[in-house]
Picture 1: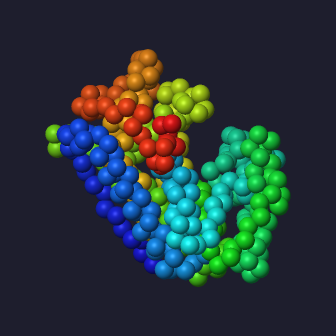
Picture 2: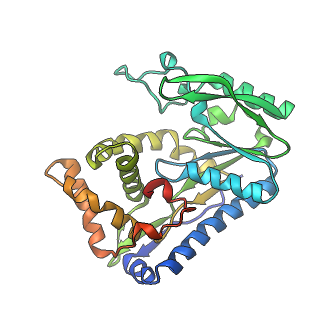
Length: 307
């Protein structure tokens, strides 16, 4: 089944500024649009009737929060639904695949215990319940049989970067799997020129989140970004055309919130390549207004990055 395609939109920054004058009504509109997309996805999932929902997306696309939003929407529609992270199937640290330089290769699908993945889902589909592992990231080891799942005629949403990988999908019955690719579909222009593609928006999201929750400087996030993107091209985006559905995780008002969230980062602009990349991103926001972080709804998917 070909993906339900959502073409990218190119929006002028002046339109964002004008809409931003309405503040809360603009935010409500954007949030409603996102929630409507999740609702439409839930309806599609129910109509298809396939019990295993494989959901992926690139870094900072909001795939994790979107997986839980989809779960909540399915539950509100009277269906049993759970979310499971593919990270729970990571191999123990001594069994990780290695790169040529000897470092652990977390991005490779073989970093997952594929046999255990197949066993858990085979049991779940055949018996209606199964025990799943949970990964302890502090010790880099799996805790076996830590999560008990019951299908009850409902859906299990499996979230992770390899969710559309054919190696993984090949371990599941084809008639039980529905695949979703979550990603941004809105880009921005100024004076007729595209100045902010989706990859840069995701970089900004990642930069803000890493700074708030991981203590990483903007330079550190920027320095690793090309490697992140290379991994996405190799392990995630290549399988995007095979998805049953593309779920748009864009919010037009996000840039105005982002402008406020970036205020602390000006001190990191310097003469390094990363500092100059940051300066280039900052320059784009010269043409944008602000919205305070306080207007961000507590239920918004964007809280994953800004709150």
